[in-house]
Length: 442
Image 1 (cartoon, rainbow, N blue to C red):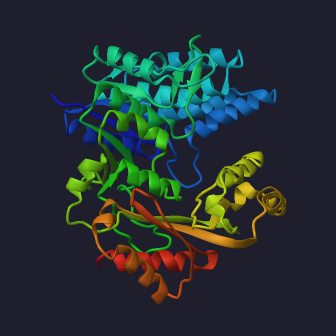
Image 2: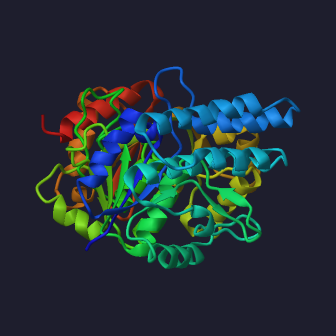
Image 3: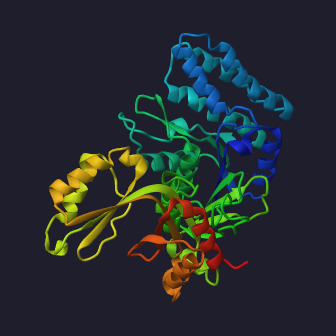
């Protein structure tokens, strides 16, 4: 039988109503055999996420204040679910064990991880699945660096003993047994690790949205949903500011060539967005929109350097990068010509040091001229189909011209996966709307 791994985020496991939904989803497909769960999220506006409460427990302890009452609030949340669902798992023993360890002032990682741990105990009982702790499967070295191969091996070995299991996300352990967590969103990583390790048919990531949209709905009204996106396209959209899965949550499934399906717990009949290999994406998207998505962000500065015979001067770009390295600044893009090169930098990274950086450019590069363009927004139009369609770039630039948007910079990657334009901050929303209208059929 094929195997699917399903991860349910905080909003999907927030209360009894949501838990009943996920049970229906899981039981509707016997191939959903391994379930990764987050800690409960907010149930309503003004509510607290369990993880936030647990971090607050740690802060309370550090300030030498009584933590018991706050920890009891956490326990009460699980106890209410336990009672409403009529579960049999012994949660009190789990509470007592954690409370005892809290008296020894454990790490913030241990305390925060208990949200997923307790929730997985409850949900395993609710589903009738085995509980399998991530502590013994997700491996870190003594310096806290994640160990991919060791983790894959441990997951395969352990899950071979369980036909159906619930696994808490977000954490693993160090060689000495101490708990180590991933960053926020770590349950997504755990789900991808399980799927990648066992070579699952699919990794389903269930959340409160029906996949990804082609543009920011705060800018474009009712943008179309992205049905299929390749890993590379997703990387481009994420880098340009789109709210998508973090690269760390994709990589374990990507290297094992496991498709990722973003689904909505509240609308389970929606197929969501499929994240697949480049080859598979081209097959599935045949006949679809030319572009996959549009994303961007504001507040960049472009420093354009001109120097006669620049192309003949060895090491010119290397010296530019050396200056940026001295200021601990990463560059966004380096569009260039025969005698020109432009450095695109984030204002956040520049952090008020532009005059100093320009002085360094002048003294160490001796350019003939320097032009500075501030308050620039970058917009990436992304899609595998673009390179195969004649006139794509012309269509994009015409749409911006007709919208009265002045293009200050153009950059296209060698993969022809995207076209990036720089426009003034004030034209950001107008430019995205214009590009969307030009390429997306109504």
